[in-house]
Length: 183
Image 1 (cartoon, rainbow, N blue to C red):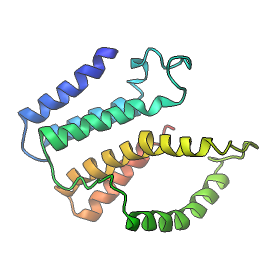
Image 2: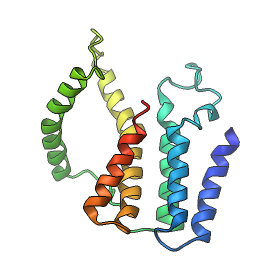
Image 3: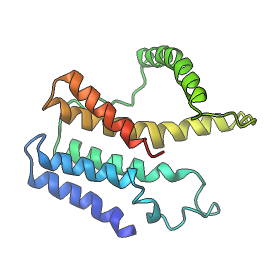
């Protein structure tokens, strides 16, 4: 399975190099293949040390997701550049204000729905204060950032080349939701 980690980036680069026209069937095949590799857990066995806490810290199951997001970014920023990916990791005060505002609006709704639907439940434990920054860091870099880059930066970007902006947003959002359906 380790060979897959070498083969996938090479195949993605080859496909995008051979078919350079923007937003064609090759782009959809590349993104579908990368998305399915992650969503179906096909790369989880690529890490021989994944269950050994002595060698690799527990909880880094998001590493394949981050790696495939990097493959996609390499493909669409270097091999076959597309504009409008729209991500910049330089923090700005404006971004912090928007994020905090949206969190304050969104959190009560999501938490209420999560508990009402039984998706969330109280474990009766409080995390140690030192665990919060580590959990935030892990979630941001290994879950949220790769998903946003894939679904918003790449998938929605390519949909906008064929659909109106609102339709592209809804389509990418539905695919994002469906990708989490089995979780």
